[in-house]
Every structure is written in structure tokens, then in C-alpha cells.
Amino acid sequence: MNPTINLHVIGIALSAAAFGVFGLGILKRQSGKSFQPLPSFLLLIGALLFHLTYPHAGVATRATNLFMDLGLGMVLAGLLLAYKKGPHRMFWVPGALLVVIGMAGMGLTGLFNSCQKWSPFNEDLAEVLVELGPDDQVAEISPILNHFQAKAERAFLEVTFEESEDLAQYYVVSLPAEHVVALLEALNADDENVDQASINNPFFLEEPAANTSIGAQKGKFSANDPLLSQEWYAEKLNYNQVYSLISNRKPVRKMKVGIVDTGVDGKHEDLTSAFLTSPGNSDQHGHGTHCAGLAAGVTNNGKGIGSLNWEGRFLDVAGFPALDAKGRGSDRTVSQGIIQAAKAGSDVISLSLGGFAPLGAPKSQVDAIKFALKKGAIVVVAAGNANQDARMFSPANIEGVICVSAVDQQFNKAVFSNTNTTLKMPISAPGVDMMSSLPGNKYQNFSGTSMATPLVAGLIGVMKSFRPELTATEAYQILTKTGVNPREAAGIGRIVQPVAALGAVIPNDVASDN
Amino acid sequence: MHMQIKGTITYVNLVDGFWGIQGDDGMQYQPVGALPANFQQEGLRIQAQVSPHQDFSIFMWGQSVKVKKIELLQEK
Image (tube, helix red, strand yellow):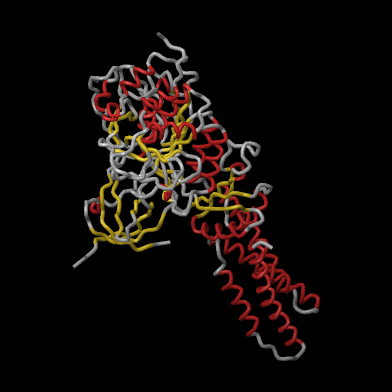
């Protein structure tokens, strides 16, 4: 029996007992015996107190439950007294009235709940992410959901059951925040239908933040992008040699880099010719656009920065929204971004985001990464910026991803960068004072493992464009074999070296423009 | 779940920057939303009532928290 029905049975039993004892007492008095009303009053007070402490409900729901339970109790007492030929009408008539009022209240409460819109600014509402068992339906948990005034909808509509038995069984449940702990307890106790349930803190888009612009300067590289001279890492990683290596070559196949982030300004002058129509084609924060520039900014186009994407020939870039205008998201939005990027055919997925997860990654993110890997994507994730170990952060600590730490201009571990001593595929790349694109044709320096990550994602994308069958493990092995050590042993893997890494995948017989 | 923490305000220059709390317990606490302007000072010693907040962000710096109450720490 579910907890909702249990509570109602207790409520009805208490009020039926109170009125029943009272009615039987009247019956005794009519037959000339003494009547002690105290037990029935105590039972009635008990019933009222029980409803005052009735858990997991708002005022309207508590009042409705009180009317229903007292009413049904009075009707039952009336039936008992009718059987005993006692004064029954004084119980069942008002009892029936209370039941009618209760039913009307239930109807109105339901109507109110269904009309109440989810408001991004309403902190009284919360979200829970629930994974049902593979054979279970949401209807099986609806008694629990109804009890907590909760509404459920499929969390990842993009995914069919055939594509992923796990992801297709996730539901996002919205409910009044005051009930969230109780709902989690109830769902996690339902072993029969629920695999797991956890809080999914929702975030919403807000007004765009102001960005600053840096004026373009003429560059000194072989490419004509004016800001190349401000990209210290372009010199340190020998981008000029990369350009010599790839500028006269064509890819076997152009690769698609999915940026799962705050969105990407698809109209940015330095991205637009490589940008694919995608759900995150605008960026209210700027972080996603910055990452997109580092991964695949169009190079030798006379505008902005230079990346490894020579003339936009090797990479396309797409944006998948997972974070809001403040750069924050939830378990669900991140998982959804990964799923969308994978379904859109991203060859490389770049995740410059993470959350503190010392007890392990959320199951939905693990499932989403698994889904992306199964689709053939290589997933590259930022190690994090807390100067701790990346195993404490998700999705960096998920099996199968390449985890990127950051180094500074001297190839030392960046002071903020997480280390990566226990995960399977650690690598590092420049991540301090990184010049890249911002929405509105602007450019700015940012620091973080967020910046090192798309650099590696872009490099893997270009590598894969010459060898499309390249797997995550193979790409990682090449990067680490051709990489160099940081100046001091730092537990961050080796630093990528694009010239050597690309040299390892570019065959001699690749078609050349020359 | 609310927690009482003591720590030092620090500016974290990552991405577009934010004010965080370096806890005396060795943990980093990243406030969800900006700290009040008068608490945005490097090295300020504070005590605060916070509640942990699971989220995923571009910052990747410590435990996200909602700050319920914050005050200057009076130390001898």
C-alpha cells in the first residue's frame, strides 16, 4: 500500500472511531446507561492533530484531506449507528456534506496546480530527476507524484528506448520545493519502480552580461588573423608549423565539434562560416563562444583569432545549450546538452563545465556520456579549476572521457588547474590568458581549464579529419605519446603538441591543393 | 541542510571572475549569485550560514552554496 493511502486510512479510522464512540455513547444514554464523552473527544482531537501534522502537503491540501477524512469517518460512524438503530442521521448527513466539500476542494486544488505556470523566478518550486526501471512506466509512480502535487515529464525527449534504455527512462519531476526531500525519500524507497532519484536544481536564462571588447591588431603569423599575435599559446604550440602542415591539405572528412556550454554566437564574424545550425546558436554569457573560437575559430580569414581550423576547412562547430546566462546548469541540462550533441552527429564533444561530485558523477551524466561514446563521439572534458584532483568533479570523473588540465605560459601547471592522478586519460593544454571570441564580434582573454579543453577538442577534431576512424583511445595515445611533460611533475598528464600529433595522423597520400 | 562556515573571501580570476570563500576547513565554497558588495573584498574574514547546492558550471571551483547569512568575523 502506498504512503498516501496509508495516511488517509489512519485519518478516516481516527475520525470514524471518534464519531462512532460518540454515537454509541448517545445510544447508551438513550437506553438509560451512563455516557462518558471523553474518549470520543480525545479521539476527535487526535484526528484533528493528525491532520495538522499531515506531512508533505500545503494548506489547501491539508484542509481538503481533513474534510475528506472527517466526512468519511462521520459517514462510517453514521452507518454503524444505523445498523445499531441509533441516531445515525446527525452523523452521515454532515459527513456526506464534508465529503462533497472535500471533493470540490480536491478538484479546485488540482485545477490550480495544473494552471500554475513554472516560473523561473519562483524559488518555491523544485525539480527532481528520476530514473525508472527498464520495465516501469511513469503511471506506476503517479500515486506518489499526486501526493506531492508533482508533475513529471520525460527528461530527454530526444532519446528513444531503442537508442538508450537508461536515458529513455529519465523523468524530470517538478513540485513545490517544500516537498522535495519527502518526495526523494518516497521515490528512492520505491525499489520496485525507481532506479534512482536526485535533486535537479533548475537554472534559467537571464539578461546577457556586458562584455568588453579588445581592438584587433595586425598579426605576425603566416595566417592573417589580426589577434594571433596576442595568442601566446599559438607561438608556444607552433601554430605556424601546423599551418605549414595543413594549409595545403584537404581533410578526408570535415569534423563536427559540439560545444556543450552557454550556447555559441553563431553570427560571430570569426565563427559564422564554420557554424552549423544547432540549438545553441546564441550565447547570453560568452563562455561557449569563447570555447568555440578556441576549438574552431576560422583561421586565415583576416578576422579575429587563429585556431587550428585553417580557413574553416577542417572543422564545423555547433552549440548545444546546457548552461544559463550565469554559466550555470543542472544535472539534467548538462546531460541533455550531451545527448543533443551526440544525436546531432558531433564527432568531438567539448565540455568546459563541471560540478563538485566527490561521491561520483550523477547517473544521468554517466548515461549521457555512455550514449555519446556509443554514437562514436570523442568526449573531451575540463578537469576543473579548484587545484584539487579531477576525480572530485563531474563529468571529468566519468569513464571514457579525455580529461584536460591547464598549463601556463611557462608550461607549469596553472595554479588553479585540477590535477588528474587517478583518471584514465589525463592530458593538458594552455589555459591561462587565452584570447578568443565573445558574442557581438568581440574578443577577450579568459583563463581556466575551460579554455584548455576546446583547444584539445579542436586538435582532436583536426586529427580525426585526416583519420575519421580515430577512436578516443587512439587519439589519446597519440596526444600523450607526442606530448611533452610539464616543467615539473604535476599529475596533469602531458601537454599536447599539435604539430607532432597531426604529423602522426596525416598520411603522405592525403589529397593536396599543391 | 544549512552549514556554518568560517573562511576568507577571495577573488577567483577564472573566466570572467567571481568572489569565492576559502573555508577554514580547507574547502572552497562558491556562492551561487553574487556576494553583497560590501563583502567583495580580498582577504575579508567572514562567517556564513550556507546550504550546499548541486550544480554544474563553467567555474568548476569548489562546492556551490547558497549563502543564507553572511557576517564579518570578529577575531581577536
